[in-house]
Amino acid sequence: MAGREAVAKGLELRRKKEEVVYHVLSSFLDVRMAREYVRVAARGFDDAQEHHRVAEAAERSGTGLASDVLRAKVTLASAESRNVIAENRLALAQRGLALAMGESGATGADADGVLPSLPEEGVLEDRIAAALAGRGDLRAVSLRVENAAANVDLQRSDYLPTVGLTGAFQMDAHEGVFSPDNHSWKVGVGLRWNLFDGFRREAEVGRSSAERGRAKAYYRGAQDRAAFQVTRAYLGVKEAGRRVEIARSAAVAAEEGTRLIQARYENQLARMVDLLDAQSALDAARADLVKAENDLRQSRADLLFSSGELLPWALPGSEGNP
Image (tube, rainbow, N blue to C red; front, side, top):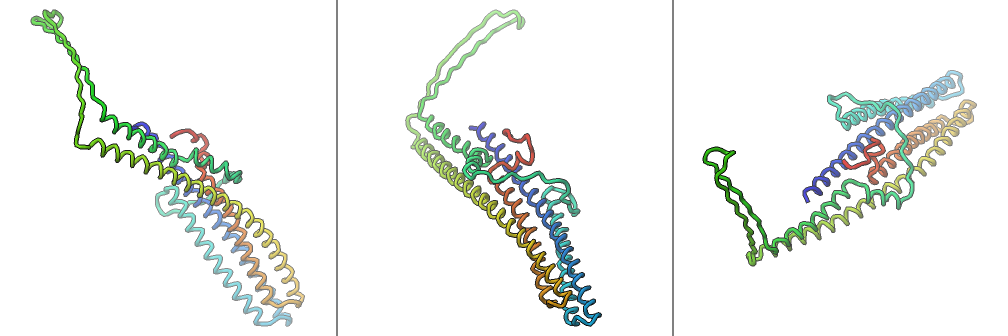
């Protein structure tokens, strides 16, 4: 029982390590997403500057309105504000990554390097089977269920008699230890059988049986919860993948629409408000694409973590027992 408990503690430690890897990976993805938001905000600011330049040129040539310049200026200020917010979020995400990595001090950590590709979602049933068989926390609970069953047998053993065997050998030497002049020996067998102890044994057996039932119920609930977590993460990957496709198509359409409206405005066939609305839609589509792509990576990380396969992915060679 003590050996099983020691192995269970090791499996729980393994799961804790996997939680650390999960938090570091999530923080790493947050930094990557924040960096992409900075890039998107910078592109939006450049586009807003171009719209403002076009509006001023149209006003100077007498084909534009002063209100168009003012609208473009307001949009430019909003784009600059979004740029500041994106840079601040990047700095905060970098500090969050440093915190997850256990870095000392307040200096942020950057998400440099190449992130290994996260595996595809695969088959849901295989993922659930992998979680039930390989997750350290579930394996630890299963060992404690075995210990609870063994404890019932241990408590029932008090009904059995206790048999003891003793033996002794004595050697006497008057002149020295290497010249004995007498020796003796004895053996004995003892039997003790407690026939009645005030129902203490019955109470202990009942308590251990209840503990065994509780451990089994907890293990069954933990398995169901793990299967639900895997299913939720699996469906999240499916949803995120579809959202990436939609967001990518929307971003392409928004860019083309903004380009056409800008050309029409330069030819006095569209209003500045139409161009600014199209630019706002383009900025939103770009941001949605960044979020959708990060959600896909995060969903795959969630699936690996809920399946108990994140630690081998992050640290090859750690597949064995701790």
